[in-house]
Image (cartoon, rainbow over the protein chains, first blue to last red):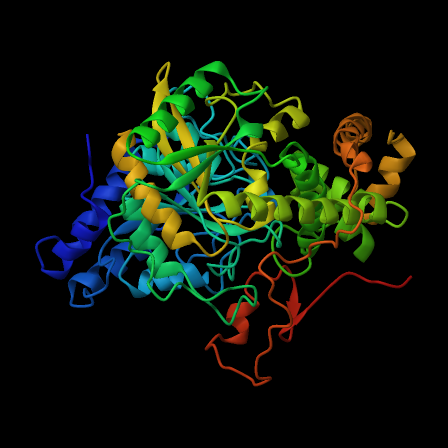
Length: 470
Length: 97
């Protein structure tokens, strides 16, 4: 059952006065209340959303997303609710300004109705690392929705709103999209501003988009993409934009990633991926076996560079400027150490410690610099692969959604959930997860990857692929 | 092979300005050792002739005019999340003896 029309249609009806923004907001808020058992949402921004809806209905209704409700992962600074990043240390944080991408969506009439759950500080692959609660998979309540943007993915899977925002540092949008059966888009590094988003790994962080269809995602991406003076890593948008023209799969050269189809891939996922790839071939795509020999190293590179950047970014949570502050410390130094002991959860501490280790004197060259150099190797191999093919294809995750608690006691096992997604972030290329099948009632996503700055081309082929896969 | 002792963990915690409980020190010494052991597979990778990557899209030294821009935020608005303030300044605990 489809609760919402395509996003472009909703906005068109609001512009023409056929639909009222206030009704759309109420519909979204009511569905959030009804779906509380899934724990996808940390807080609603109901009061502000209603006010904004009234403004839209009062005439400010000509935007491309007029009246369209959406849900933001709780690591985006948004007015109208706390921004916690699902962490105890940021509990109570009242954003003094908003994320650039939120401002851009609002300028086109979109209305944020709620903040979604995540693994605290986006550290995780299941939402089990949230300092508050675990989100349940909408297809099977005993399983995780993936992470870290599990609340956003579940929001779209349950159609609490037509789209949701996430972040993707090592797979945090594509992996939960795969686990919940929705579209999850990770752009080229720098295509969307990270200003006003809680930083995790700054050389890897990107803004993710969740939607029910690629076409819906295109409109949202088109509104958000482009340079921002508040994030100096942003790149120019494609002059043609991100609303794509109908494309044919015929003649497209698509490389099936050999390293992702080997050992470690669950049989039920392999079966779905092979069937999906066969459908792409039937539709005229040329499927070519492609190898990036260093891909099996990507996870090790990631779990050096990401914690290193995390340890640096999380040093700002010292209890002096914002967030939780331990009040009974005897001096400044103890105020730091006690604030961070109490305020950070296990996984944040773990990553800070790993990052501190690999950046510390005596280990810096062997770990951090080595990982940065292997990163170059991965980038070079991807460049070679993209000489042979236009796109790469493979699974998003080695398994379907796992059981709640299954990996909770083994951090390394949890990290392995990212094994097929982290390389895209290390290389800086765009990637998308689109639903391609169901196994035992659980969704399987297909990952398509394009060269840097080929976001428009990737979206176009994803629309074509979506058509033959569903 | 990296095997972190309790002392190593305590030293790291000190560098990272985090207090840890006794249980956490034991737990982290096991877990961090396992993670480091996993990432050590990179030590055998031949990277001769390769530069390191800091930034993936090739941007360098993005410059802007050094001018004050008014974003319209009142100072008290920007200070509203600060645990302790005094006269629009952050108030912190004593630093020196």
